[in-house]
Figure (cartoon, one colour):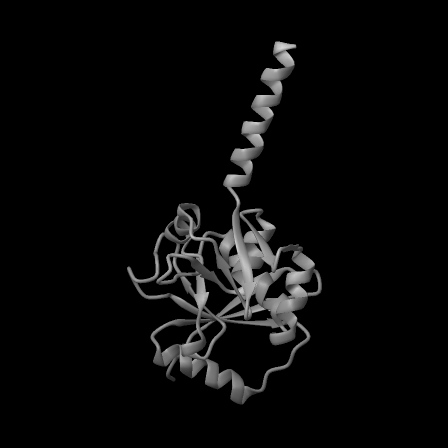
Amino acid sequence: MLIILAFIRVMAVKKTSERSSIIRGFLLAGKVITEETDLARELFNQGRFGIVLESKKVQLSIIEALYLLEKEKIVVCQKKKKIKFDELIKTGEKKEPEIWTRFLVYKDLRNRGYVVKTALKFGADFRVYDRGVKPGEDHAKWIVYPVTESSAITWYEFAAKNRVAHSTKKRLLIAIVDDECDVTYYEIKWTRP
């Protein structure tokens, strides 16, 4: 009997510690806002996921939330209901039809150890920091444009992307996602003849 009680206590402690190691986030207006916890802020400090708000909560983009949800680092709730990965993708597709392509590129870069942040002010999808570099400590090395292998881009659009990268002193990466969801990167450099 004592052995059974000890086992039940160990399992209860294990379940409590497992629950406390997962961050809860809430879907609000196309963003995911975490609870105000040390764990959420540590996630920001360690991996530079999201931004820390004045309320000390962390605001994540849908793509960051998808990545962390897939890695089982967070749970995402809407009202009081947990949202599954596929549901969060569908929510994101309403605002961003190409969210799946962008997520695959984000995931691939994160899995390779890079810090990936939005690059809207640069006219790109992502800015990517070299391994070991945190935003604010140094500048991003690349700006990234995710595309599918079946998508078309005009020479005018291609030149514009290259000009943006050159003018912001970053390298241009075109990330091409194929039908098998593999990502291939092409680094484009501006040269003068």
